[in-house]
Image 1 (cartoon, rainbow, N blue to C red):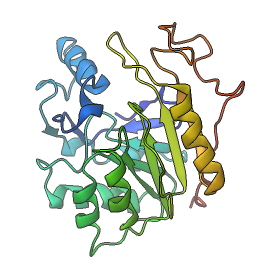
Image 2 (cartoon, one colour):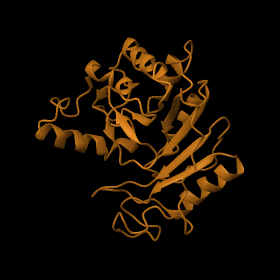
Image 3 (tube, rainbow, N blue to C red):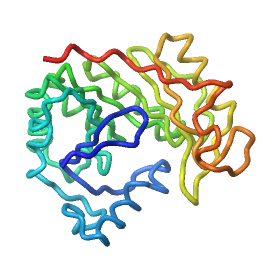
Image 4 (spheres, rainbow, N blue to C red):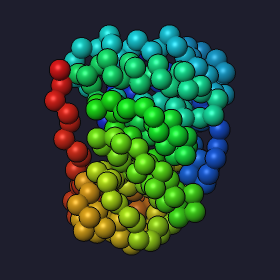
Length: 248
């Protein structure tokens, strides 16, 4: 079943696939990998293979069974554009999205090249928000150009975990940007000046800015409790999001 989400920028999760493989530094301490192993040990259906990529077509109908308009994060436990997921199956997922106009679906990937290739000759449903992860300059920033090739109503960047200063960003045709630090016992620190640089660029380029969390380190560069001022930046919270499309 779809699950209510603790992720601040969404309402529910839908995982028609689970499992993944690491492709860049942002994957090093993957929360989904740890959670999948825990769910396997608990005997949770769908996680019999732990974090190995697993296709779950029996989950395709889940959003259709929910009538209340909701914001879904698609594949919080996987990457829909993983090379092990066929174009045919990705098409089925977007067919579900298209036939559930009451919902908004947020699809995030690190496989930006495949995202752009898949949609070269396909239309993006108007209720699908497409995003890429941007954790650093070498691997993350180039994904933005690939995302820009896709004609989605909402394009967004998940700059989490932010691992270094990303420099100047071209945010042309990007509507939304999320920033967050890494959580967990092995979390890598995120510096205040990195975040402020991105926030200022969002303001200058008219991009909605959402600050998710500091994670395992505070703005002072010290280890901290995740709950202590975990979402404060410049003394306030930043929760800007694009407007939802009109629901049917």
